[in-house]
Amino acid sequence: MTKLTQQTSFLSDDFLLKNKFSQRLYHAYAKDLPIIDYHNHLPPAEIASNRKFENISSIWLAGDHYKWRAMRTLGIDEHYITGKASAAEKFDKWAYTLPYTVRNPLFHWSALELKRYFGVTDLLSPTNSSNIYSTTSEILQEESFRTRGLLERMKVEVVGTTDDPTDDLNHHLAYRKEGLSMGMYPTFRPDKAFAIAHPQNYRTYLEALETAAGIEIKSFETLMEALYKRIDYFNSMGCRVADHGLERLCFSTNSQLSADRIFKNTLSGTQPTAAEQEYFTFHVLTLLSKQYHAKGWVQQFHLGALRNTNERMAKSLGADTGFDSIGDFDQARFLASFFNELDKTDQLAKTVIYNNNPRDNGVFASMIGNFNDGSIKGKMQYGSSWWYLDQKDGMEKQLNTLSNLGLLSCFIGMLTDSRSFLSFPRHEYFRRILCQLIGQEVEQGELPWDEQWLGKIIQDVCYYNAKAYFNFSPQNYSTIA
Image (tube, rainbow, N blue to C red):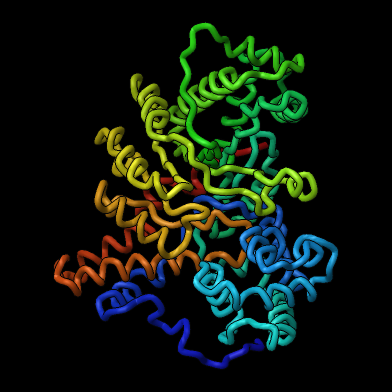
């Protein structure tokens, strides 16, 4: 296999590891552990079909709005980002951009990805862009660099995809029938089922849900019946996780409102008020959450993103194209009220909460302690740094806040939350940062020099806690006719 091997002092074996104890923790305890990537947006079809990528641009630049934002900031025309420029032209523009991302996480991520997958140790720039483009694209034609080979290269044990209730999961079924060692499990993502803000879009979505569930949906009761049927189906396909993306959790017990009346009015084309949207979302989520509890699932809530802020670009390019921001929504009262509503009847499932605004670190880390009831180790989880916090400073602050207000030792660790098959070195990045934090405090005399004890905690956070928490297992599949 062709490799570019010029060595630099950057990204050495001890990258981010500043002392001997940190280095020992990483190399002896964290480095070689498998990866349970329990939340990502990888296309199941590309795993099931074992896709081969035609060039580096198609796997590295397509769909990556982090890179797109950086390129736009440098004044690069959209033609070279999401437009009709050739794959080589788009890569050249990214090669021009990357040196200017210094101190942005893209700089570290990109260097790690080129090195870990392709053996490229030169820093990408316009001077070597053509060579790296041709070399990496050639490597991608090897059979071991199809999607499954890329995942195996990173020791990925579990991939948790993100799937709408209307998805037939046929790609999951086809993959499962092959009996491969790496698990691919669906995640139930029902956001569109309560997105009534746009009645016409909602009616269109309900048509797809009716087809998937085999139920005519004409009332709130039949809506929930359809969603319960899809939960049953997802459960039979090994799903053990639900996920939700919201500005904040909802809570409304307004006795003047009716979920069924709101639902029927929306079907008739009536625009729901903000209060009606709040009430409706709260009731759908509460009922779904009770169902997750009954199934033994984990529920995740990604909170705090302000999405599609640029109306002109959203109309041109659609959602998830790089025009979302950190939101400044109130979180604490709604988190507490929603969880308390479920806990009243002991129907609060295992829960992971993620914040997008760094001001909410303490709120989220302290909130989980309110609803840990001793029934399950780490039942309530303050999730890993997400989106705009998914970088060195964000990870350190999340780990420190969790350590100060909860138990780091119970943490379920890192995930990619990515659409890219080259994003898995982010687990390495996280593991190095974690080991450095612990090793630094050992060096400073703030933690005891006990390698075996601290090494076990490192291993739990990087792998074993998530393995126990999610209970992903081929035995969870039931027989599908």
